[in-house]
Length: 332
Image (tube, rainbow, N blue to C red):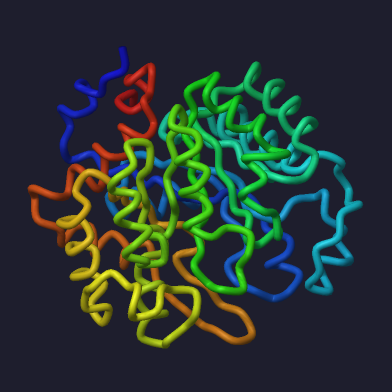
């Protein structure tokens, strides 16, 4: 039976649930920032800020998309690889387990997937990958690659069956922007409601949408993470459409990200999971310059009351993960 009693004894452990490794060619080719992060860089900065463990997954663009088209800002298949994320997942696992095995002991890798394109081929590659390398969950970022998350209930249902077979949770990028038809928080909740035997974490605090956050609190198989928290608070002040409008927004003072995180932790003490979204705690393109740092994200966490902090930085994530072997979080 799953439990987390031995990890729970270290109530000061901080686990970052949301980190990207690798290179994002779409961001790089279009002049956006950030666009890359390797394992040593992540862990060096994270340890300096007081983080003990990391959940990691690859960047979002993948080599099934044509590189020249990405350079034009377009998503066209027919690139260097045939199976979405097969190269990226394997490349990240090699970095963790083969290139930097001592550092790799401190991370929990997730495999990333495209819920719509080539599901059978992806599942075959995921099974092959799992035979060689352990991974502890599945990640989806459907918005950037324009892939419908609701495909999980149709063409991509095999991914849900795979997750149930190996008791793997999902972390899924969520959106509330009207033009984002691919990864609406409400659609992710539909998938979760239809799949009670699989666990889901909705990233980015459901963009502060109170209705979706309340529904996460109601469902026994859903959690949410607060990744890229500070720049999302800044987006509220800028009136940007990527966060919930005032009528639907979780009530808090968004001029103070620390106060917002505390309010969410008090309202959803069993559902909120801390994650930084490194290196995407900042986002810079031709229109926006939203800047935060790893330290800025941790400062919000360190300001939480002692009674709330362990749940946000450890306990709720462990309930999402349901690790069979707790020692992976305590080994040196």
